[in-house]
Image: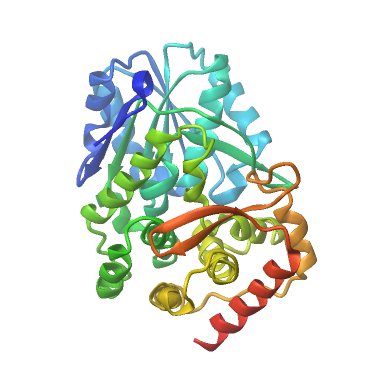
Length: 363
């Protein structure tokens, strides 16, 4: 499918067995010269040879760079390591960076591509469900600071995105569930039928190996593409994609990015956002029960950490959506009808946090 951004428009390829055609797609996109293949050790062990061979057969001079697995990749020091490596390899502005991995690899490699020589071509090859349905789409790149999540970054659109759903078969179930949090988010902010359909197929999706239908990936990608094409730089409507992320990012920050996968933090953040929605946005509490039940079934072993609300509150003040010192939340007026609303009372958020913890523990 096509993400329409005028001169920055690009194709998103979704299907089985696409990694073998990575080099061909690069050639079709007019990419040549050197290719910096950025990955993590586990992903490189599984798919690096296939990607390298495909790129090499298309005539590209491949240089491989490995970053740490997980959130450890998302730091300014790792970006410095990458761009120094690009310089040592003699990469020029006409060369390309290939991000082969999950969201952390895509975010960090993408930011390096956006800043090296003031911008070189980027191709996203997401290998996790979360990256395929969310983070690899739309051009957001960036890394974390000690003070908060994704506080340094750039909007840098790829030349194309290659979502090979065969790569999802190697994912641990925990990582599949993490991706499903973003799928559920799309159901809550755009297409409620996703929630019912996912509930019916959850057992097979979370089986070993996971059975993820490419059509599910496509539906999520279409929703995100439609939103991004109308608001590339998150000036207004794109902010709805952050449902659950205000609280979720705070959880990741106060737990030093080590306890939760991103989707797990977002799942717990969506529970809090739903509670705030009933108090501020007017949605009926019972309308949220199917989504709450689905989240609990998806994350049966997940729990809220023992952490003081004040620490979470301080982390939320550094959220990217804070404007003029005021916290802006993505809430639900109805399932499928999000709204961005200022939530100025810490008591409302703290009450929602306590209610979400109680509800999660009791269900």
